[in-house]
Image (cartoon, rainbow, N blue to C red; front, side, top):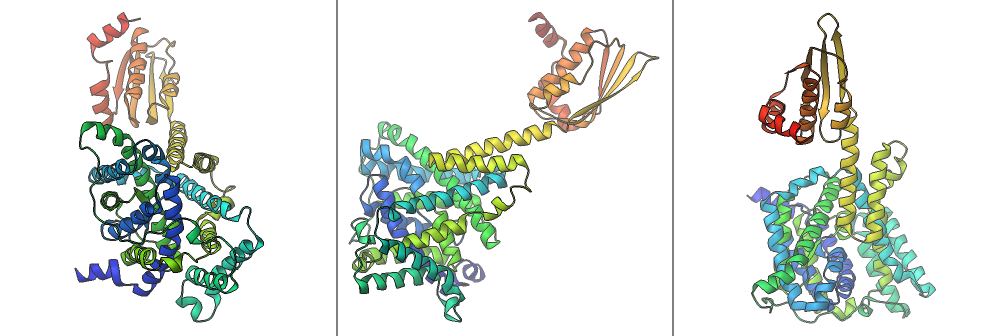
Length: 496
C-alpha cells in the first residue's frame, strides 16, 4: 500500500510541484479564453479547471496527465448556453460525467487499440497546429514589444536548460514567465496581460446543485449535448493518455481514465464549472517541466485556485507574450517531426491517413470528426490490403471430369467478390471439391458468396463437396449458410 502511494504520488515531489506551478500559470489564460468561447463568465472555466485537475489526480488512470476546461468541449456547449443558460450547462456537465463513468464500466477505453498509429500521429500534429494557430491573435496587430518579449521567452525556454547546475533545477517555462513578468513591470511596457483576458474570481467555488427542473423535458434538452461532450471528452483524453504513455514510456489504465473523467466532470458541474477533459498542451508542459506523478496534477489544480483567488493582483500583470512563448514551445514539442522525415519510408496508405486526419481536424476544429475519419480510412485501407491476400487455386482431373479448388486467405465483405470470380461455373464437371482448410470466413457476406458458388455449380449439374472448414468457419456457415438447406435454396431459386 505504502509502495503504491509512493509510486503514484511522492517519487518526484520537487519536479511535480514545480511542473504543477508552470501548468497552473498556463491554465489561467486558456481557461478564461475557453469560457469566453462558450459565452460564459471566466470563473466558470477557472473553477472547472481547478475541480477537474484535483479530482482527476485521485481518480484518473494516467498519472502526470492534466485535465481541465478545453476548447474542444467549449465549442460543443455554445448553443446550449445561448439557448438555455448556465444552469442547464451545469446539469449537462453532470450528465456527461455519468455517461463517461458508464463508458468506463463498459470498458470502452479498450477501443483505443483500434486507433492506428497513423491516426494518433495525425491527431498529435493537428493539435500542435491548432495550439500554434490559437496564439496568432496574440501576435496580430501588436507593437514590436510583444514580438521582442515572445522571442525572448522562447530564448529563455530553450537556452536556460543549458546553464550549469541551475538549468536543471528549475523548469525553463516557469523561468520564462517570471522573468518576462519582472521585465514588463520594470520597463512599464504597454502590452496585453492576463488581466486583460477577463475578471478573475475572488471567492472559492461552492458546492451547488444545478437549478433546473428534474424532469424528462430537461433530460431531452441536455442529453444530446451530454452525449457529444462525453464522446469528445473521452476521445481527447484517451488519445492524450496514449501520447503521454509514449513520452514517459509507461502504461495507463484507459478504462479507469474513462471513470476518472466522469467523476471529474460531475465534480466540475457541482462546483459551478463547465465540462472538460485531458489537455495535450498542458500535459506536455507538465511532462517537459518534470511532472510525472499524480501530485503534479493535484498541485496544478491547487496552485491555480490559490493564485486566481488570493494572488489575482500579481497574476494580472503576467504578459500574454510569456504564455504565448510557452504555448509555442508546446506546439513545437507536440508536433511529430519524425512523421515528416518518414513520409518517404512509410506506406502511402499510412501517410494518407495521417494527412487527412490533420486536414480534417484543422479545418473543422473538431477532434472527434478528424479521428473518426482517420479511423474509417485506416479501416478501409486495411480491409483492402487483407482482401488482396485471398487466392483460389485449382487442379483438374480430366479422366473423372472433376476439379479441386483450394481457397487460401481471408474471405469477408471486401474479398467476397474476388472469391466469386475465382470459379469457372461454365466448365462441364461432374464433381467439384472446394478445400477450405487454408481459408477463414468472417461475415455473412462471405457466407453468402460461398452459398452462391455451391448453388451455381449444382445448377450446372456438378456435385459439390466442401472440405477442411475450421471450427469458426463451420459455425458461421452452419448458422447463416443456405446451400445445405433445401427449403431455403428453393425459396431463393423461386425468387429469380
